Length: 372
Figure 1 (cartoon, rainbow, N blue to C red):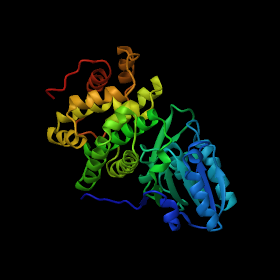
Figure 2: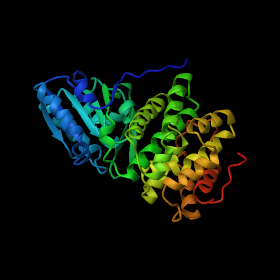
Figure 3: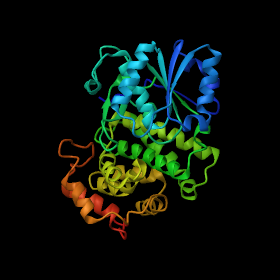
Figure 4: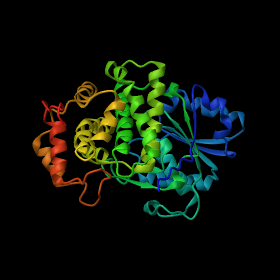
């Protein structure tokens, strides 16, 4: 029987932190988890500190989160929070930062070994986590998933626990106004992939379908802005909400082929996470259509493009794949990420399918989607 569980309170709109302060106050000692720049530049940190000061909350700022932050760093942060008697956590930033906040909240209340967090069952509930995203893509602010770096940036592993849903998320698109065009494009495509992978998924339900299709529509409505690299206030708001909606969708279905295959492009070619996924998305939809053409039609209808138009759109906003060779693809398939796991796709994925998806998406420049 389909189930829908979404315990995170979403508050959106300009100045939503100051307008709804009670959702960010959960005690007298708070740890703010963030990076060095985005929280300050965007104005999000100032808004949070204003509310905390008004309510006499003592806070500590941990602004050391980067793409190189690993599980040992987060474990140490959790122990520090436990020693200091921290009562709740506010994460401000992109997906890496929000995931760090969620994981540290588990370590803060559970004296466990670092890798025990992957057992996904804990003696004590984590500290409450409030999320303030400053990018529009990851969806970490509305999911129970947490991705951590084990040692180096290429070795990442996720875990999932319903107790890791954030308590509340503040969506203020003003915090995304300072994002560079490339980051805006990459995160928007990542959000689109989340919703598409949720809809073309064996775990899809009427509940997840509703939010997935809306997430797809909202990104599709911003296609022109993504091509031009010029974004109105409305565009920024749609992309931010679409990111959280995409998280809500995959929270109930899990991710799919695109993310798992895209990880190899990120690790091997240093292509950003969102762009890596986007390079494979059109071909993934065509591949899924062989199993269920009507659901594939639903997806491209929601985007507002046919597959050929979607491919042209992706070609305009994504990086070139000219440095990717047949040898690269064969190596990725040989070291298949599916040797130990089965994706949630509507078709069984074989190594031949992987080879076909990679090849058509990355090497076949004249690929025609008129008949698919």
